Length: 454
Ligand code: MN
Ligand code: MN
Image (spheres, rainbow, N blue to C red):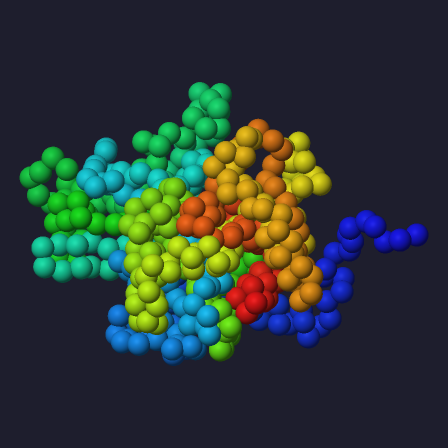
């Protein structure tokens, strides 16, 4: 009988000890990366250091570009484009995002209630609010005053204090538990507890004033300085190996730092590419890719303008270059969760440990909002993976009409590039503690390298 059916063996069964060690070592690098870089600003700072160490130069400091020159451009400290100039200028690009769902502060955040001090928050991205209460949170971000910029990172060091959003005790939750999951925790109740000692002064809000006094001593700031701040509260959990076999990784912010990390690591190993290679690490994906650091921003085009100008290529060629360039939108997708079989159509889902996940479209039931890549391009990517021994799966996400989500692939498709969603399946996606497979992470890194090079 001819072998007509798809192969269904688990990739782990075929992996030898050496290969397994490589996978685990690579994964440890990723664990360290997400433990030390929880926000887009922190990522950009670290990635700039990594790029510099690997001979990438700020494109604005370079007059002329020639093949194998390595350059980067940083957009407002929150997103970064890195490129290696090829013998040809049309490019292979991988785009991922550095922002992750989190709890931001409102511009007037500090208040006091019954002598306890709190921060008012406004969450960022699609979260299930009940998951974000009663967990340790750390504070990250910047405050800009009249004459300085203060960088804040509290909670990550072992000796640091942490913060949390206190939920109701079960004993008094009869009303809350009768509500739907969506409404049981309201957005306006995601208030972060930040202190409890009153100051010894004749004011109405002594605890609030005491907190402001502590902040003033530490950072020399006043209450109104929070108006010009970007403060993000992230889960404080450390990313760790998950399972007796240590085959999985649990950690915050894997959407989409796992694709950012793997596509960056792949980029660093490219030398003398035929086509120009671009690694785009963008921001604001979780709120629709708007804003001047999101993928919709013309700042990306500005970076391409710089590339063309410095490579001495007429800017009139730009649309032609887009139309002959290839892209992967490297973003995570939801992995099949065996606890909830009813929401899936099993033949068309992504599974942990089945390799990098290719998606022709993401979006809604009608395929609205999707770039819906053509079969020719899907075949190109698929054959590339097959010929390079890259384990891949082709999937959608969930049964039709059960929900859906978008990626940035349509934005690249709008420019004229061929683009496909190609990322890593994540269990408990968008939760404070997401789960990925070490095999999938390592496979994506290999897949991205092969894509850049061809
Ligand atoms: Mn994502
Ligand atoms: Mn997401």
